[in-house]
Length: 143
Image (cartoon, rainbow, N blue to C red):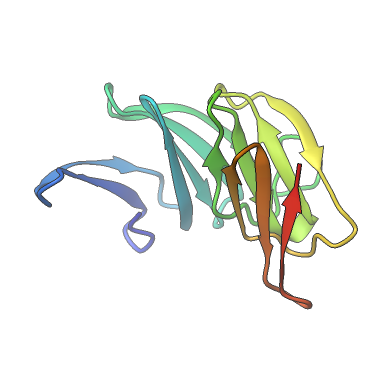
């Protein structure tokens, strides 16, 4: 991810530059996740999450905008996907994890009394690990 130039750069296994995905000039790219042919990118500048196709090298869908309703974000952070392609998005200033299907349709939100400013999320062995570095730094483990 190249935040300054608003793009995701793609390289070969040997480090050769192959291509790039432009995320838009209003976006401050924060994180990416890859599942199959899809690249998902979270952007702070416009509070959005975008889905790109690797085979077509184009934007497929963009959701979000500033807010706290379902499908809106307030600083989306480092996202991840599960084995089904669902996208887990730490919505930092809304103190929640937003879960979307592979087409970015909203499924549900996860909140927890100890979740403050989540910035990263990982999935392993059917558990969700959430990094909450602000105030009282912790890693929440949710099942």
